[in-house]
Length: 396
Image (cartoon, helix red, strand yellow):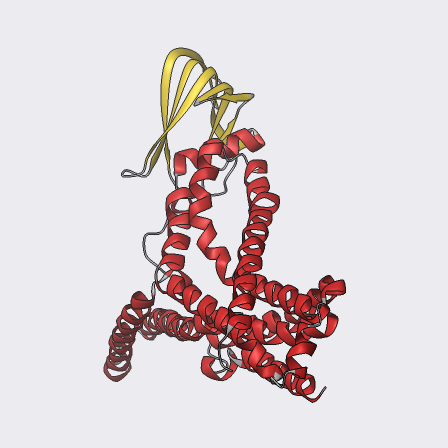
């Protein structure tokens, strides 16, 4: 019997437990981990609310496999505790027929997660890095609220404040560094505001009731003063996608072809430079060194993209693998000890599955091994473990 009432009943129970566990696990991660850390770093409610929808999709490739494992352990543990598995065996049904709902859940969870991995997860992850975090003005205010000062090695100024009320800096001290690294201007103001001009890469520090002390001993007072400060590149979000995980599935192919063409052009320039030579060996050596650096960047990016092609399917395939392992373990432990069944499955996954997968992914990303030979090893190991467990279960 491939599909019947018992299968529909199991599938309904699996969906119920899966949905409840997914909501609970995702909520715990969001509240206990991410939101609390964001509040500690000075993020306001508006920023946190903006981050949550961008962050949620990125959690699903890790929470969905875990909840799939949890659901199969719970449901099949209940079936075993209620002696329904024993009744099915007595009726002549093979134990393998009972796993179809779990297989269906694993396949659907894998398919849905893969669909999200095509566009939504890379897009929201990229937006999280470039839109929310790259709000330079808000980032500066967050630093002031959290630490009371702004000190950056690439900034030519230091700003200290006593308190931040809305967009107003109270009792602000502005210190500007000169060419020799010492402060050539120190200004203190009752109130100040920051305005960022991203187009011109400037930070405008608007100070009111400002006392100015110069390095030459000069002292002055102005009612209002605006200090322009060069904005370092570190504070400006990069609009070019230089990480494979930020690329959608279509962009992975587009960027791979783009880097391939650029690599051919660099190789051509390098060969021409070697063939033509030059009157200045030092200059030629410098040109070849720069070309080699550009070449290595393209090679690394192409390796990273190839690894990403295989990493995403390997991650989502974990849903099916976890479902196949969770069924026999849940049946063995039964309802009375379902937590032990989950931990028994989950600990090897944490200790072996994910470390193996990410280790092989990193090796594939740097070109040490072909990604298709390494990334799927963790899934293959889980599938073998599931087959062995079902074989032993069928014998018993």
